[in-house]
Image (spheres, chains in turn blue, red, green, brown):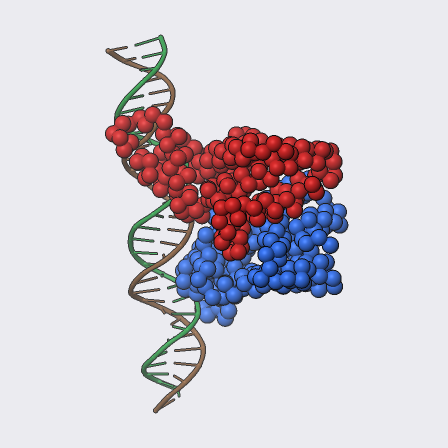
Length: 200
Length: 200
DNA sequence: CGCCTTAACTTTACAATGTAAAGCAAGTCG
DNA sequence: CGACTTGCTTTACATTGTAAAGTTAAGGCG
């Protein structure tokens, strides 16, 4: 029985995704529980499995949605810049915005063994993010990563640097970086990300 | 009863740590099971809890041991180089060696919510690794990260770059990098890591 | 309107897991 | 030789994922 008394929820699928994200951020991937999600949504413990098959199905759907939002955050940051290099750095800052705002979801997306990468929706969402990275390399270096060796290295360096920053910052490391606030931190991050990009 | 028939195992603690690592690498952190570890060691399902308190205790002990080995791998790589910059890059390559050789253990050490960071052994082992990073920055830049602002950025940049490479490569990404073999890959990695270090 | 079909959930059931508590075996020290 | 202690086992129970069967409501068709 739905919490509002109705038997048919209306849009339980969307509600479960919402509650699943709350469960994920609160408990972490490792303590994530389907029954916990059901409890939050006020439905029977088996309702999530009905909609998503199993835990992997729910997490996969959540991750796919996450990649779409991730891309949107990056693009929003980029829209504030006009020069290719500034836009590339902005994409990196968006990457960090998202990771710090949704750490558990971020780790689910990038470092979980519980995702079903054969799922077309998840693959497509992930590739869209990767494509943006390629486009930024092309705009900055003037060569496409899948054709030019140097551009390929640019792509790896930029991705690794930003991804590493995200992972470390999620873990609160290094303390010296996490101690910086607002503009100071952003200025430091711009400088660090800049090291990985093609020279100006 | 121990698999060899003895009641007292002799060194069950060490055996459990060994089997726990096998369990971890085979099933991943998210599907890691105490009972699975016990089964591998041929002891009763509650034996691990007897030695380590609970799952967190076992994983924490495993991670602490992991940090010690991690440090050893980095130092082994560094021993082959004499110049500060070469040694710094070698430490990064050792970081990647370890991550790729023990991906699940690596992720346990750096990205698990199941570790008890109040444990002194774990803290000490982790700090020893961090100290090596600081020493490498000092040797390369000529300034200590806890005193000099630029050195602090050096530390963050180097760590983030190498850590990001580790996380991405564990996930098999990017495909272009993972397709490279042996010397080719190492040369590419040297170049990429070099971007994050103080200019030559 | 009443019946039938089907989709959306619930209930029931079961095996696997973590952990607490009590029990038993075997070395150790008096 | 007997009590103590340590190391492991047994038993027990709550929580979890998932399968399967049951129940409720919504919609189409006569």
